[in-house]
Length: 87
Image (cartoon, rainbow, N blue to C red):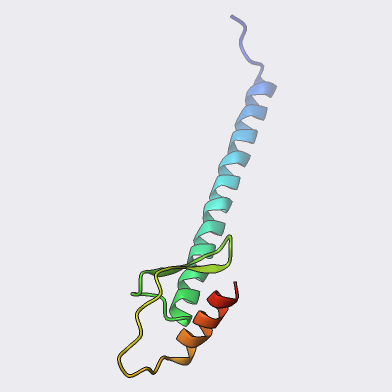
């Protein structure tokens, strides 16, 4: 069974290191996306309501919370309801 040349070994290790770096970059990008989704969920008051933002479809997912007894909703909740009804 033939041995790999030192040049081939070098190329294999170099490409493996490139692949490892790209994997780390992809994980960093995913973490940045998760952080932005979290910030947007906080901004739109979705945290604690079993609702989330789907970044691929750019829509709010989950159940719409029931209205409060006094009939008054926050401006953000009304804007979200209007946006969901339009889509």
